[in-house]
Image 1: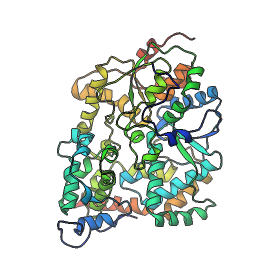
Image 2: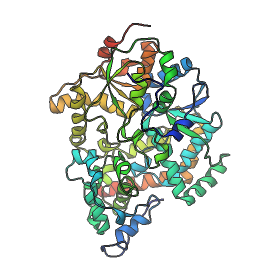
Image 3: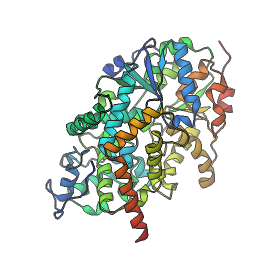
Image 4: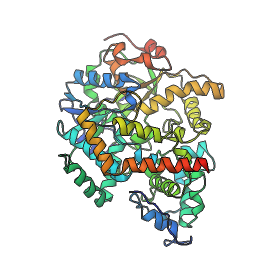
Length: 175
Length: 320
């Protein structure tokens, strides 16, 4: 289940801001942003901060606390390496920046931002849906087992999700 | 040299206890990226034969779904249900699975954490799975080959027939072995890991302690898929490779085929983009232990590596 809307109220500072509420409605949520002490350990461990100096997880968490929804239209959230070092090293142990970035990207996609970043990922998803295996080459799966996987994918909405992202990406290209 | 059975530093005792011992049957969970380096799978199977570990594999398993959530392309329900289906396939044959991929390792544990935090997701997965004759499984352990070899390192040393004390290596743990949402599934200290060194140094291998040893390989999971400009992420690889080169090692030992793929291929890109040559072979821990156990080179399939492994082969000692 992905969040389809990022909230419908005005941004504001504090736990009640629309961005924090939208994040809280996502099935991966669980971070208490307001317990972040802004120590910056997440930045010290961050490979994305080396690759893209504008990527600063401490600042992203602060902007979430401030309800800054320009995060969703900006490029920063697409620079995370998903290494999870920030999660391991957080002294508060309850700031999951890995999931925060996943959720922010989901919210961005739901608003039509960043769809072009999926251009090389969606074909990989098609490979998986066809073969049960992500990489190139023949499937190793027995036909009956592959059919089970296809039924699970269908029942849980994977093909619809992939098709939806693809068609909205196409629309974006033609605008 | 570290005594291969010495008391480890910083090791999670409960996790260590749960890792299969050499005679326990294990399910070998296949990863998709290992198909690029088939020597990894071959090596693991040969190692298990030499240790006396029965190995079961199955073409009923699918891919792990490891990247789907960070790809932002799959519903959480799909990821949990597919993971649970794979647990069912494992449980039908063994109590534990071993994987040679950080992505597969991380995927199972990530999904467990998601399911624990979302009872509704697990309930919906149960409905789908029961329609296929499966159930929700919570008593299958998924372990990494680095954990398995560390737990059984005394036997690894005994089964190794080639002297390795002429080899100097750089170890790359990889992010998704060290960093998990649930600390209970992390064996080592993510800030100062030592288990791979413990396994290798038991064989007499010299392990370089280089500055960037905890740094990401630079693949950044999907960074190189989502950006047209791939140079930024390559900066991380460049820093790591410079740090490794300063120690004049015979190879880099990795525990993840995706890190292996990146570090192997990126050396060509680094030469093109930054005019820096490295030529440092990148081998998986299973392949390296395979060398120590005198598994034939054609089984270890170094022929598919981009960077030739000749410097490593030249550093190997004679059979004992």
